[in-house]
Length: 428
View 1: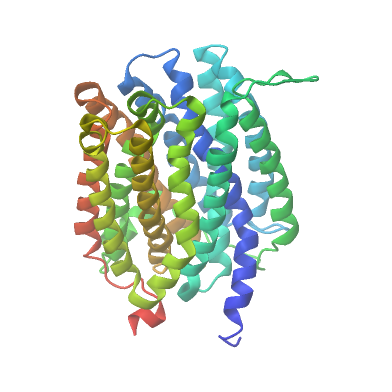
View 2: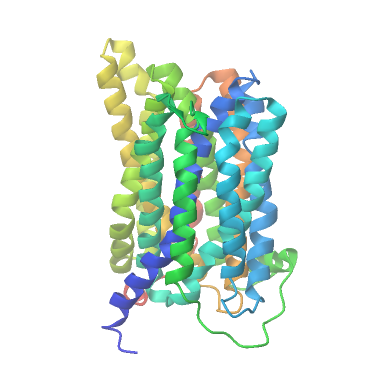
């Protein structure tokens, strides 16, 4: 195939695959913003709230590597990833509708809804992610990941900027009744079902051999990565463990922080993560293009440096705004500006790190490497919230930003040890 024709085709294909990421982008911000608020009605300890918030990550740790590796050896007329997607995404939408009502009923109902939602959502995530490297050549995966992350970012904008303010809106609809604190989840569920239908209709999976390869157990996969002569994949995994620890140490407490320290309502508090989502969506594609020119590792290291600085600025934000008598408008505006910058560089890290790891994989074990990525990212998501929750209990909510800065600096050091994983142009 002529290389000049490939980018146009890959952009079209990637945008269609991005519909799967769109569904995740709708669910994740609403879940992360408001499940801690629902839990806060029943649980006083922030450390315990952080621990409960790791339930989804524990299930992701168990399900994503398993389901993704299983899809590696699945062969059906509609593909190896699509059967899992068509079952799990619609079921996720069904449970997502009932999540806020469960939160208003009892702690037992809320925990049950959290478990069911993540059973389906996390089982869907791996096959959705693996669709892209199945289809796109290695040298174009940074740009492709940028396109896909843009789709997820657009969905996150819809969830945080358009839907989250509806938490403050009270409507009584026929049949449904009172929609207080439920309307954003209802609309998101409808969009998830529509996106799933479009994904299935527009994306046709690549034909594969009739006899699939055997599946590598997860422990053997880890041994292969950590004991090989090339340690680069290991360093990528360790670095992402650190930067995801930074992110997930902050993420579950962000809405509570903006409510308690900046005085925002539940609906407006969602705009804080919306700033991250907007920047993520806007800069995902450009960051992939930049990495194609200057290299993925270089782009990631610049971004990690910026993320550490921005985290420190958020740590001291109250000292140079409200403590000096600044207005609430100024304080909120500057905090959102910092979050916008955070989202810009965070999107650059995510856009380019996955392609670096995929560069070490082959078509037959692409699902295995995708599973390892999520094994480490979800391990961070499990460990970081309770750790940061304990820090918050002792030092206050602002301490989450100090924890993030330390983890970003650690990731900066580790990623420097990675060799290879670049695009052909950057390598040259």
